[in-house]
Amino acid sequence: MEEAFSSHFYYRNGRLFVEEVPVKEIAQKVGTPVYIYSKKAILDKLSQYREAFSDYPTLICYAVKANSNLSILELLKEEGLGLDIVSGGELYRGLKAGFSPEKIVYAGVGKTDGELSDAINAGILSFNVESLMELEVLNELAGKLGKKANVSIRINPDVNPKTHPYISTGLRKSKFGIDMEDAPGAFRLAEKLENLNLVGIHCHIGSQIMDVSPYREAVEKTVELVFKLEKEGIKLQHIDIGGGLGIKYRPEDQPPHPSQLAQMVVPIVKQTGLKLIIEPGRSLIGEAGILLSQVIFLKDKGDKHFIIIDAGMNDLLRPAMYNAYHHIIPAEKKEKKITADIVGPICETGDFFALDRQIDAVERGDYLAVMSAGAYGFSMASNYNTRPRAAEVLVDGENFHVIRQRETYEDIIKPELTAVNKESER
Ligand code: LLP
Image (cartoon, rainbow, N blue to C red; front, top):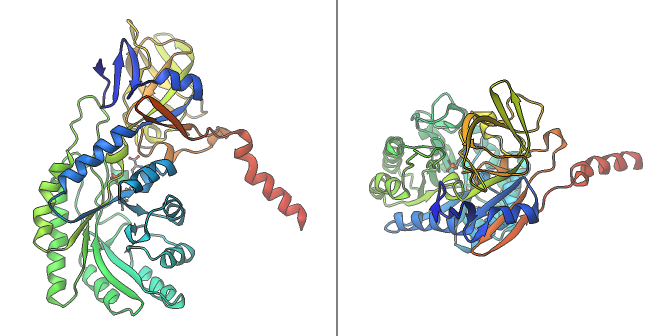
């Protein structure tokens, strides 16, 4: 047995397994492309977080955007987690999965009236408010509904998380949060508005963070502001430090352990005595999932080789969108290696998974696993090129369950057919 890239994925006699199931068996039963998740990998990561923060009252609010499959949400609900949501759709999913609204926090710079009203009615733990206008609108809507809305102010601590610019959110020039100099005014306004209940302070500096030191800077600034507000008589209940911990994408990556995050931030937050909220997404689910795909064709152009697989950028957008690296390994090991571009079938040059990558010399019909695809994989998938979205499978020991059926062509065109019928009814 040889570990294959991350825990719960390994080779036994040259065959790739997820827990106790050979991935090829899943491919043959469910088809490809298919996302495969390891339940144990998710629960192990969760235990690491729990252990790391066990000495301090901490609520883990899983960031739904990383992977919003209902079965995954149900699993995390059973574990007692809360949720970090960013849309009405994610609220709908969370409630469907049975999460208690008192454990749901809601961030996002553009919440519509409809979305705000739904969340007010649900009675969520906190609206993580990102502008003064949002405060005013939320107050007005809560008043109309005869309710009080719990709010936190999302501050923008202007900290560089040293990650990809597209996923850096805590820099001043980004659209997120309220700048440090405007933040006190936002808290005062929230305290004053009569249909709002000020409960906390929020920040989230970015994603795929590989060095925890920027968290120190962000949390120190947050705590400084908490003390300043206390002096004015503004009291809060919690500090929410967001998500962002990185994972292993390359073989040599050494992402921080949740305990490093805890050791960095808990002593600072402790000074305030406020409860802590964390919002991990990628680090809980990213390494627990792979995208399994079948080789359709091989193609050579001189000494340039292409491996064309049945997954495309519509299934996993990260390489095309962020030029992200994903490790790719065969479902069955080969003796020979080749250097090739591993590409999808979509009509875009950006539709690649790897360029000039050294890989086992797979043949037509073989399977390749794209590793660390559990987060921002399926959740960012689309139907581009009218490609049905992949199936999703959860492995649990020797068993596996389809937790999302592969879409059919009918599924894709159904809303259009319905629209046509409605139109003709008029
Ligand atoms: N909380 C807030 C307010 C967020 O905006 C995010 C992610 C998280 C928590 C969770 O962050 P995580 O622990 O997953 O790093 N699509 C990109 C990632 C976008 C992250 C957006 N915000 C990617 O594929 O790399």
